[in-house]
Image (tube, rainbow, N blue to C red):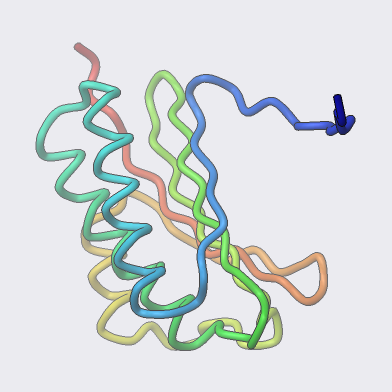
Length: 135
């Protein structure tokens, strides 16, 4: 039997992470995977709908503006008690959004907070947070 030793970092049960190709297809897959994961969390419809649009915009930006050949972007969804955090990390860290375009204006309208975190080089993470209603 040929058995390989592999080390996997456990992802907390309330978190979701995936690496995707920086293409329109990767951006679409990010949205579809996010919606499926969010629905399994039994979040209110309005939160899922807003998060779907935020993921779609951030993933499309990563595939369009953050694309570097041969390097994937990362989608992370982090669900805490009162907040859903969406993070999209790409490998074009030098291109920080200075003036929000149409897509980031939509993110700003849907999210309760959003921002950009540079690094480590050559990466940047664009994040958005949605407050979750207390049920």
